[in-house]
Length: 630
Image 1 (cartoon, rainbow, N blue to C red):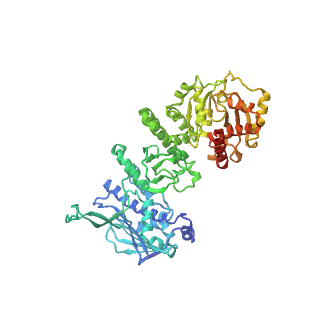
Image 2: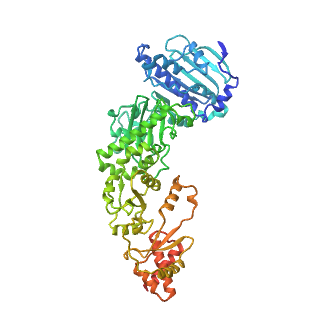
């Protein structure tokens, strides 16, 4: 037996490892299992290259727990190590065996599945163990050796009793880490990090039900089910994203989605298969969920892997933010894993990967639109918030998607931007030559305004996503001579101002008298009373909220817009239709009580149409209406 000192620069390296190597101690298992997978992947590559002549057999990694001894063991039947390699790989923290192996075999080993990015991975064992034993035997032959260390720079190295090639890493867990002796705890970690590792991972056994081997039947004549204990293989070594798209069916993609998200109750709309090997390595499958108008609860659904090892599901620094609304898997060994998140955004490979994914998503959507527009339209309500988000935050995505952006009107008809402009340009061009796009955010609540617009021969869009206020502003800035105005932002004839003006039936003195009546039945600090020369068939009173103020407040609510706008009180215009018969009746009514009651009733009708009449005010309105009928 020999002893020695690990090649480290400080005597305090182990306390530092224990406390700071990873913020989450459970990651030690990912690192050790990944190393074991590396060892098997190396042997597989050596066999493929003819440098290992024997049959490698069933290559796998085995995890086992011994509660009596307080140990957790990670075993593999890969390349193993000689005594010299143990000295080299385990006693020099700065050295990475996987990196050296990749350099030695260069291009021949590029598909070997070696992770090789985790640096201090082996020493993560000391975050949870008071002592670590490594018992190993090299595929090249020679004696097996045992390396032992108790969490300080001292170690021992001696011959060991092991007849098969491979390595056992035995962790003697410390008192603070006894949780890792529980089957459920280990199963959870393996499920999280090792679910798709390229080598079988065995963890104990499990009981399944199979047909009775003797063919015994139950009372219904069906073959009985009996319990059978089988090996518990916790991973799928060949997940869908590692295969060629030509080898997969739609059912394969749906099954993989269910494998990723077993608790999901909805199927995805469609998918994109990523498969790039130059100028960077990238594979993966991205799914479009049914987003509807929700941009919050779907985040953190993209899982990042490196050679099938789970890294994180927080990919906002790796892909553009709008892509985090998608679900699925991205696997790339070219994303640096040991750098700060702020640096990730500046990394050249990360930028290339991000741009490529954005392009692939835009290309997929554009091709769907061109290939089967009817199907694309049927999915529009589920994907529009994603497309709007992307166009708002990524100029290149905006340019690629502009021709595939759809607008839907209140009749349920779909148009591209150019098609819709052609439809409305003649009737909805104002006196300044701007083509005014009228839109509703809630077709039911804004029905009266929509009908008023239709009576003028105008068309109204439905734009009800949470991003609408931001998105219409962007479209106004990108498109020539285009305005977007919500249909309840003003009197209809002011929304699209023409050269000709509607004549008024009221004199200035009459307006002044009526203004006093109406100001007496509304909150002056909330409503501004004004008169508009509308059509006599329009409502007697219309309540509007100025487009600019409302848009700024909405933008603040979802992020962006002018600071402080969300705290501004709501202000409304109370617009009196100067040409409506009811307004004339109020003017000629001699009884001031009846005059006030009629004015209040017309205001409440306007508030009711805006869903603004509630509580005691609504009760009073109903009672007043009954009294008028009587």
